[in-house]
Amino acid sequence: MRILIRTFFRGLRLVLAPVMLISEKLSTPQAIERSPEEQARVDEACQNLALYQFRTCPFCIKVRKEIARLGLNIEVRDAQLDPDHRRELQEGGGRVKVPCLKIIHDDGVTEWLYESEDINAWLHRRFGKAEAQAA
Image (cartoon, rainbow, N blue to C red; front, side, top):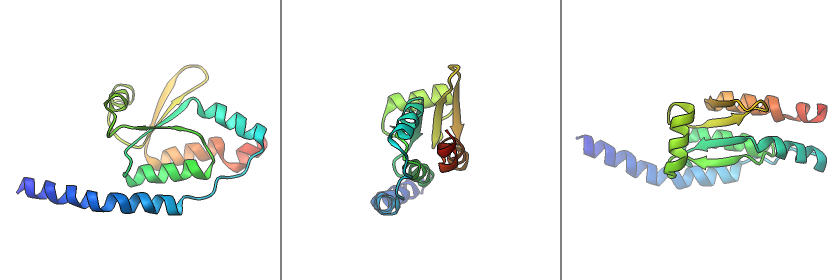
C-alpha cells in the first residue's frame, strides 16, 4: 500500500510540476524601476544573499516571484537536486527545509531565514520601493 501511495504522489508531481513552472513564468510580475546607481547598490547588497529552494515548491515559487518583483539578483541554489547545496543548507541552517534565505550580514554573521512569508517580508523591508527611494 505504501508503494502505491508513493507512486501516486510521484506521478501527481510529474504532472503538476510543468503546470506550476509555466504558471510561475506567466504570472511573474514586472520588476520595480530603479536608477542605474540604485540598482547597482541593490545588486551589491544581493551578493550576500542566497536562496535555497526546490524548483517546484509552491512556497519557493512565491519567494522567487517576490525576488523578481523587487528586481533582485539573488543566487538561487537548488537544495533538491544539488547535494552540495543540500549539505550546506543542512549544516548551516540546521535542517533541509525550503525556502531558506542565507543572509551574510556586514559584520560576517550568517543568518538562515526560513518561511516564505518571513523571507518576503524581510526582502520587502530591505529592498522595497520606499526603502530604495530613501537610500
